Image 1 (cartoon, rainbow, N blue to C red):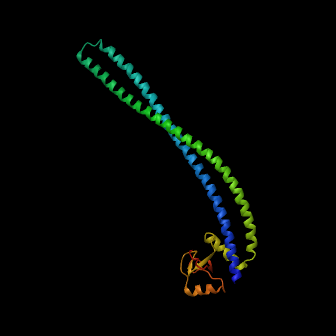
Image 2 (image 1 turned 60 degrees about the vertical axis):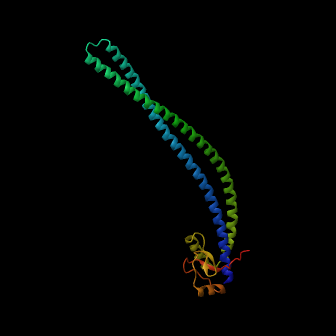
Image 3 (image 1 turned 90 degrees about the vertical axis):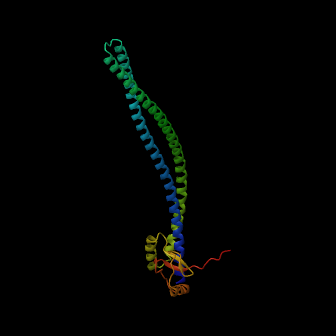
Length: 239
């Protein structure tokens, strides 16, 4: 039974190495996806700012056209004042001129704000465009690096996989089937050590009697809490 347990422990160690490789590959690709997403979000922001800019420019043209038209109207009203015969009509046109001037002043203030806003938007677009360009360059360089690392990791994985195949043949089929099922259902950890009566897979205590049986190594025991196959793992003394 000691040999059966050792074979399972060795197989577990190999599978954990494979798992590390898979995680490294996933992390590397995850970094690339994060950068890609940041670039996409950057271009989406640029599109939004360009839309705001276009709306601002449209409103600016409208204001400029209205200001010009109203300025002409003021001139026309001022000319008409010269030919007014009654004071009432004179006051009416004078008020119209003042109201038009006030309205144009408000339009000019809005126009100033729009111009300032357009300048800020242009700066923001330039800033985001620059950042996106830098991120694209980073993505290109990172993609090359990740491709090289992935090729090496894949080579390492293939070597370890051959070792695993050989090791799996040493494990009793009835234990191997249970091992594979547990590995899938327990996040890659099917065989776990027990130290001072505590399962290191789930950190729960196992019954004292079961721990005594585990020390004898006469049968393959499973944790009553997480169902992982267990072996005795002595406590490592701190130096």
